[in-house]
Length: 133
Image 1 (cartoon, rainbow, N blue to C red):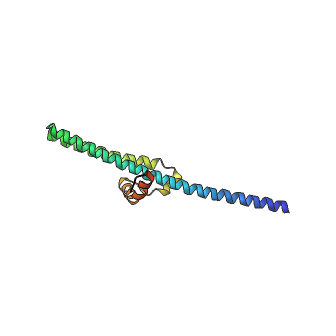
Image 2: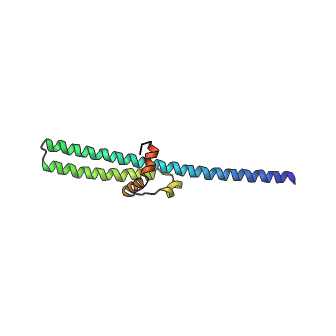
Image 3: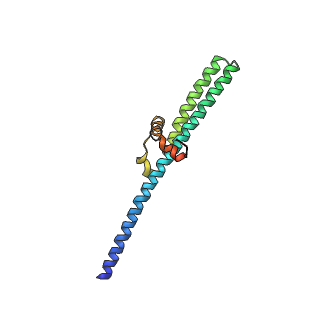
């Protein structure tokens, strides 16, 4: 009788330990996924800044070289198409890379909501990236 009680206590302790380990691992995984999303969104926002800078610089050079208005308008239209494609594709890729288990933790589903999520967590992003406030 005593041996079976010891065995049951051992089994209960083992299952309890595994359950708490699973819960702790899940919590840490969700934290890591959210931190990864924030860092990725911050990098995407930074690439958008560089994208816009390149656009402005190209327009400056086109105007300086006295390019035709048609070429400038065509460049602006093509740039807007590329920018929208970039925004859509990067967010789609980021969302696609999430395992199904973590789909519920996503707090954005497009570029606009992603940038809003980034703005809400700006302090946390600066902390994660090690930037001084």
